[in-house]
Figure (cartoon, rainbow, N blue to C red):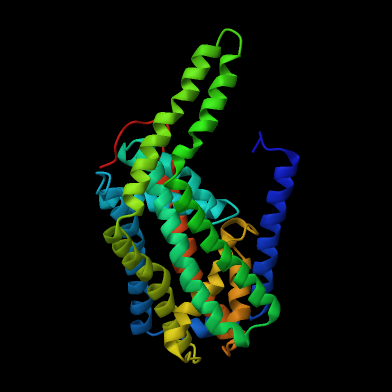
Length: 342
């Protein structure tokens, strides 16, 4: 924090303040005693289903990393779980869901010993496919819910969904064309040569980036154009992003006396409402996501108390609890280490 400018600190304070304000708004929408009363309605069967679905969803998320890591020779499910939890923890500390992915190549290097080129390609393809799939499913959810949403909420969801599609497409396109940066590398190397005394050495280091971009681009292209990989990733992604949270909220709403119809559309509405996490409003979308999703589901006819309670439980089990769990592996992260976690 010491090396951050006053402007950066002010922006961060504003984002955290917005998140806390949004959470405070959510908390005012239902009395705490009412929430406890609704949660008290959960029987052993409902609790078992909610917890079981949460575990399956978490394992599916680990699987999406393993699918990609296996393509570059790092197939350990334990390492995939460690990478996922660490990156997820970092995502909750930064303003946008995609921000934490910047550290993913270093996490992959620390956990598996893979090269930075392979780490960048695995992280980039994971981010690109995730964003494209999320954008497509969220767009369907926005279109289905559009007639019942206010103009402001509809614009917000359309913006966040569009950003997912744009970000995913941009990442995939840039990843397979990293060698286009070679001209920039050459120009930087030429400038570095003009530095007195250390110019030659500096230019050599800069020119070495050409090898990195070539290796990363080749690895990225090999992963990004593999239809089998897309199929396996999409299967895991669908479980943890669509089916697990959708079933979790369906069970919770039914237990709270507010069954949702049609049930098949609820997971799509949920993906659309949660898409605001991509907007750099608050770290990890905290507060804003809960508030926006509450507004969406109330507009869809869900009683406010039931909507708030179900969303808070879902976010706790699907986002905040895994993020807290990611603190532990993140503490063992050594960005300078060449060791491999088995």
